[in-house]
Image (cartoon, rainbow, N blue to C red; front, side, top):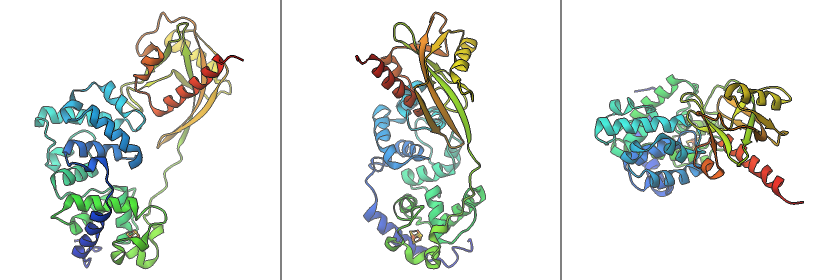
Length: 366
Ligand code: SF4
């Protein structure tokens, strides 16, 4: 038993939390049934992404891949396209690899054993706890950012939540206070409390169902918790991006490498350059890297796109592809309709929208 939970009235706390959850739980599409595959998809989508954003993606994804087998049998391009815009694409690549393994090794049934499930690609401690407790009622803790915030406040924990040792400590605390007869509802209720009431800023302590048990509230320090070390400064990367069309109006796109950031997604050719005149460097890059001749016009837009560890500062140059004979993989020349069928990350969708806006203005009669 940890010292925080020693004299904690766990039963009364569970009752207050679960009663509140039964009354206030949001009606979300992945809560309609507890199919392990659907719970898994929703949990992967919800990592780093807001509930409101996830809802339409989840519904569309499940319509397209209604079963684990359907997802396992799908082509990677199709799966990436369904994920387009959600970001953090390694999540879906891992999910895809993992469901293939479940199909082959476990006959399509998501394993309910924490050790077996945690060996699958991309399945970390949080996913194990969330999926197994919600779908199978396995009493495993599901400690995400919401839960760490709630527990930091409830038990006045001042350890840095960015550390793995702190997460492990919270997992141990959950094992000590969990409602073992309802592990799924207990985990989900804590997450929901963090999302709706015990929010990062201005928690609604006066409406909180577990206020009586909260040490941070008693001490008046709720807003000072949790403690989290600041991230190091993010790197800024200036990129010049070319949207090149040939005489038939087909556009040049490129498939990214099969590993690393945004692996296997499509983009417009680009180069990293801090030059004021990125245009010249970009024309040279297209020539040297792909053996193609391009003629670019002046820049039409500047965009910023932030990842967790870096920021792309994109400058968009439209232009003409002079000769398209030597276009080969990883490049493709596609019509506008074909382009829409490829999976692009959000930054590149924004580039495409700027290009279309510009092209529309160019075509407009005076
Ligand atoms: Fe969070 Fe306030 Fe409730 Fe404590 S009382 S758990 S700080 S909302």
